[in-house]
Image 1 (cartoon, rainbow, N blue to C red):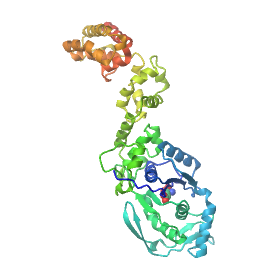
Image 2: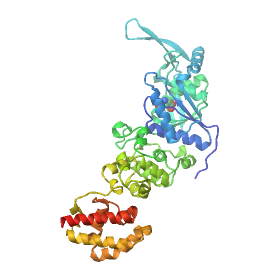
Image 3: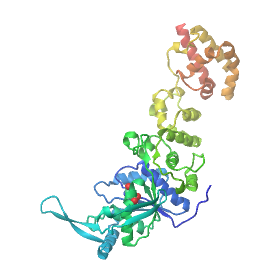
Image 4: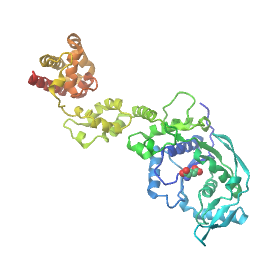
Length: 455
Ligand code: GLU
């Protein structure tokens, strides 16, 4: 692993506009700024870019803050541009006084109407900057003309406030989405006019959907909030987002956030767009689910169970704890637990299942009397196991030879069906251990009685 340079003068920032919930693509940009700052022992700033009064909403700011917290992106300072008008005013005035900006009268479409804006006096030159990901980038700014930097001194616009803020906040590294690369030359011109140092730029390639277009709603969930609702773990989403466009240069794929902080480097970012692969996310999430301890897993699964399941006669937290691995085998995110319940894959763990008796018959030998005899025999064998030793292994020992002699399907099919009442389920031996001696024998006897009714 390459040794990280400690540089506590590094300052990065994440600058979302509160015009929507936190998009996973933006969360990825925030992640890289966060990892870079934390990895160097520097500072990470959150800046709410709410100069667009019409589109900025308090509820979106709150939702962005909540998503940042959920993801674990702690920041050292937070600012709102709407509270910094006085600072911008000072810099605007300075530019006007030095002749780098001027108030321009605009012709407005309606007759006789005139309004004013503040324009930046473009020196019309070629700007070259070194991008950490893209390499050297050159733009001719002539075609930009004298661009507008404020509606008036109280209403500065995006390019201007970004430059003032990055200067005032001491930002050393601007790590942001590639969609901002064409904004950089304007911002560099403003920096030069106000005498601000040029930060290091790193423009992150965009997050693409499988069809190579920009990831949007029509491809599925886009906000961090939605991923939280679906039951992805924040550490898994962070791990997955980090791997979009970055890899450590070996085949390690599962990282905790602390490991990412140690290993992340801008130098290892890919230049091309990063494909958002939902299957990969599911896989990464499954790996992180496997790292949870029993109590965490139990809590996450229990909160997905409906009142209906929780009030079944045999529901108990203890029983739920014995089936955690049965559930985790079948899910990749916690919302899948709700689907399992809907499909009837959970209720039989907590109540005697009901079913048509002929479902107990093994297809190759559908004789109810034979099936009943097998179940009676299984009950007899299981009766000899001590209730405290009713393990999968002991259950297997007790019935395996008999099943071998009589035919596995003939013996195990009705046994399994009696326990779960479903065509598919985990191994019947595992089910027996989960239910314990008393309940297992009860279910087998129930099945034997229903076979009597159809013989
Ligand atoms: N507020 C801008 C955005 O949400 C980010 C500006 C920047 O990072 O420089 O896209």
